[in-house]
Image (cartoon, rainbow, N blue to C red; front, side, top):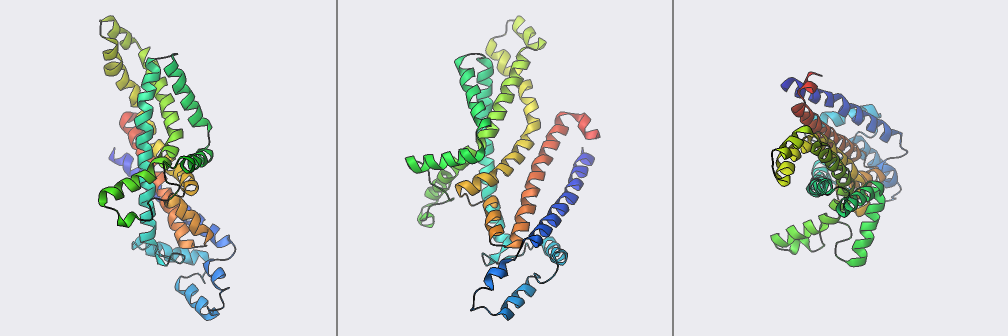
Length: 321
């Protein structure tokens, strides 16, 4: 198992290097940079612009800029945000925390709702409960995240039940700790539900299908023949085996939520890594763009790594690959 983990970790290194190189190359091909707009200000002299470019190595070819970026990252320095006028490290990790919380709460909502509904739909097969759950799954998989996020914004604006955008209220700093916690949670609920919708639908359908297959297994029939109650047969014997296959998609579910968070953040104005990436791109804040893309890739790779570990844990044959 240790060899398997080390091999997967080593596979991450060339991927992250390739993504960072490609991002630097694409940013260099884009016309202009942050100082192009700054040079239009008559109060800033060309000499000052040239000095600032030299300070951030923007007067050098992209591969030289990449070398300096890698050197700084290895020392724990992610550069300087020219647009926000603060170190990129503090800016990015504050937004990264928001993205992590959004994805984490969406994961809890998706799995916490999907598993009971999938079980209920399987137990009540072909009943109105099963039809309602099937409709929820169909709607969750059919409606795009963009449209669902826009509908959620309309709902929040029309009812006033949820805030429209942002992570906190303007008076957040004046609140008590308990009020601050509720304020942050209140802002988090709607984006997390939108992000969880598609994942919830897929997990619920998978849970229903797995449990129905398990209930037709011979050992379940034998348990019923021994006179065990239906509840004991379902929840003690069948459910445990039906849930096991879902462990293999847990990591991929996490990776999917992290990628989907970028869409939800930009539409619902949640201040996460995805929104920061778009803001930095439009402002030509090149180092922040590269930092965000590499960190987002790292999160996706970690999600897939967790999935690989769960697969290897549940099926020892995978460890030999």
